[in-house]
Image (cartoon, rainbow, N blue to C red; front, side, top):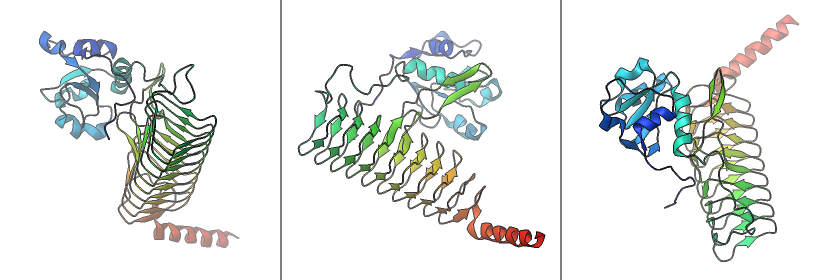
Length: 343
């Protein structure tokens, strides 16, 4: 889908100005033509090109640093030798803090995202609403939003700036959609919150600096999302909910999470940022994951269980930390027998 995006970027900014804005230091002797070279965006190490600034804050991503094509990279002095020759290192003791400042510089309005225009009608004149839609009283349709044919927007729902809702979808009462693109035949139940900030802060001894979240939420066809579930938009990349996935009430999905097709996520589950689920994954009620792990296709996580490492495809796990289901069962049985002996 060709979409104009949800945030406006500042004009290209010289590397020297990016260094100043992020409290970073340029390498000694950097030629003026490099210092004055302009950058246009903030990207991950893997996605960055010559016109982008990236950052490294986690040793886990050192292999990506050596391969990045970024024009500049926020990095600690300890890793400066690993920065490619074509990339200008921006030296800082706190790269993640610098990353937050870079985002604030390139996206100055990202901390105050648009939903609707003050004083405008409930349905903004610039919104595109296809025939046979039903807009119930009190619903808000923001500027340049799109509602597909046959969809129903319930009372009190908010469809924010440039949000796209596909055809034959249902958006429940008092739900809110921001920075989101929805496919066809999507059901969003009452009170769901889609596309708000992810929980991102650059923490430090002088306080916690809010990191702007400039990604989106992509919800594919035939997804159902339960009441009062929350799905955060991505930080730089997108949060993605795959085709046919069913999500229960009161589920929390963090930023940059990627959920595959036809997954089942039961109530009170929490999925931490940047976790990836393959297709047909099942997560039982009150389960949860740490961030940055992968759960393979067809895997099943028992209720109230919490994986902390990658789970292979087809595995069945339980417990905290999660381990193979049979092992967990044997451990519980052994504890039960031990408790009976004590009696």
